[in-house]
Image 1: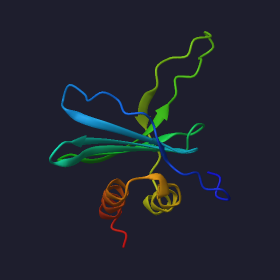
Image 2: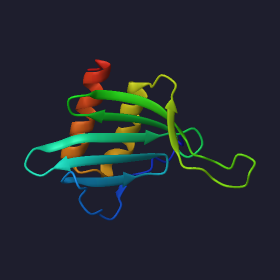
Image 3: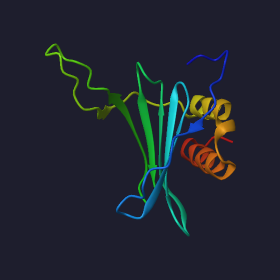
Image 4: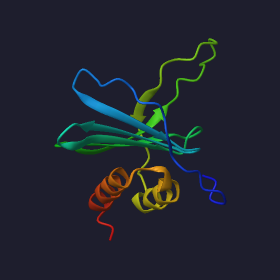
Length: 130
């Protein structure tokens, strides 16, 4: 990640609510994406923090009642047949929660405080960081 000029998250246009009734909010920065699923009246039910994009993208997901999963993103680049495949989640390297918190902090100025605070709190709880 380019640490000299931190990219700030910006929100993509709102998507229609999913059949589950969850609202999806998608924030993007140069090297990170944060997708948050929110249920009206109860709050955040899940989020996915994608980082190290586009070359070595990793995905850290959290879901209410299930906790965290971490995976690498196989972008489905052309495999010699000339066609790009669908992206897939595969086993990933061990994440560095302290680094993710630092990078989220740098880019997080573009996030609503409730979302930023929620994600930071979950990352600290997961990694037992102060």
